[in-house]
Image (cartoon, rainbow, N blue to C red; front, side, top):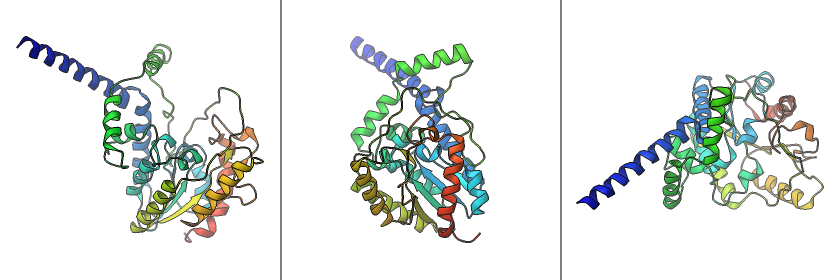
Length: 308
């Protein structure tokens, strides 16, 4: 009897601890807090934008690289930036935007190469994003992995807890990477600053068979809702003289072009060599670079879009 009571006491303590940890991670300032909030805010903004519209999706390589105001002015139709976070994975990113697609809409997918390299369409934040946004069975997350994610969701990281405590002590509030206010079109309003030295990355492999298959399926899903899918190579700070990078991007471009119309600069394959265009990562652009990117993107998209 005493042993049973002790076991129940430990189970109750564990349950309370896990619940507290989950609430912190999802609502209190953990990494998932801001990602969930940003996604839900973008969904709400998309619901307010009239159709036909242009929905832009992908990871942070979409979120931090466009200027929707410029695209709207050049293209003559509403634009919503639905980009979220690459480690969420295509298996979650693609279905997350699908409910916002209405007949006559155009979806532009800008997948960074880290997204395209996933072997199963899942990233390190797939499970936490699925759980935090109330769609745990989206993305074909293996049961064992999902169970592990459920357990980990209730365990705040020491680094996160220390950061939150420091934020409260110094700023009076908790902050996070994706806590920027958004424009009415879903664009970020803050420029991230890089910490550390720069180097040109190497694209080591082309898009995996799984990601190509999943994007093909996404095109069919978009078309079933009456929309049109377009694709774009991302701007990336990479070594354009490296043969491996050239081959990987060229092979990726050829494969993506077989799925849907693909836009990019055929001379550079969107490889950028000016580090001053980039903010804190090899994909995120500074505000002035987002303007340049959006002007070029508008020119490339114009022939592919229906007349307003």
